[in-house]
Structure formats: C-alpha cells, structure tokens
Length: 172
Image (cartoon, rainbow, N blue to C red):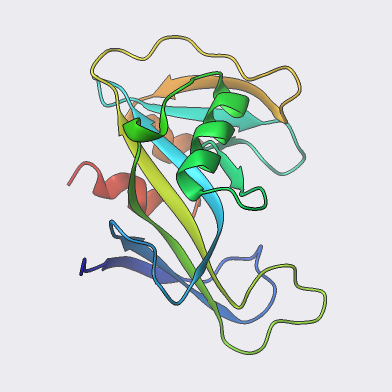
C-alpha cells in the first residue's frame, strides 16, 4: 500500500458546488475517487517544464492534459493529450503517476453537474534525459503553442494554477 502526501487543500472557482480539493503526491489513484482527467508534467534534462498555451478566453499557459475518453486509461489519456497539445510524443511507459488533484464534493452533486462527487485529476511525470526540443500542437488542437520553461517562469506564467504545488514538489 502506497501512502499519499497532501501538499495543499483548497477550493477553486471553476468547481461550483461546495468542495474540497486535496493536492496529493501519490503513486496510486485514491480508490474512493474516479479519474476524470489526466495531465503530463514533462521535465527535460535542464529541469524545464513543457507547457501549452490554450487558445480560449480566460485560459493561458497550462500543463498539457484533458478528459479521459470512455474506457481510456489515465496514462493513455495523458500521452494522447500531450501529443495533441504540444506535439511531443511519448510512450505510456515513459510516464509515471506522481499524484493529482483529489476533488470531493461536500454534498450530493447537483443535477447539472457533469462529474462524480469524488473525482481525481491524475498527474503523470516524464523526465527526459536530454534538452527538450521545440514542439508544436496539432493543428486541430485548442492549443496555439507549446514551449519549455524554467521553474520560476512556470510559476509566473501559471500564477494561481491549483496544480503549482505538485509542480513545486518535483524540486524539493
């Protein structure tokens, strides 16, 4: 049995019902939660992180990731989203689960809420043994560009992102 470390507990404005979000470092998905989305944190040999810029109002630079397709495993979704949103193609064996955002609603989900009351946003980690090469999102993607950024630039470009404690924990 793997233990999870809670890095932070917070609420976020994009989840309307009363909730609690725990940011976990863990090698396992919590058994009480359903994985709804998967992300890929990719660091190169210079410890730069690959981010993608989502070309939608109110969005910006983010970690590549998105919703699982029906029947899709989280690591497969992370690989697929990484390729679509950045152009970087990795094998599932190159990623490991490093934790995620555990979301627990504090009451029953509203009728119009499209997610389970206990959801998990899985974050996978890949560490490259070389400098990250330039990448480009697939033309049909919602992303306009992708690039590699140093740790301080990630914190600047993604200020306020709920996943930043997960990213920071990679350097502790």
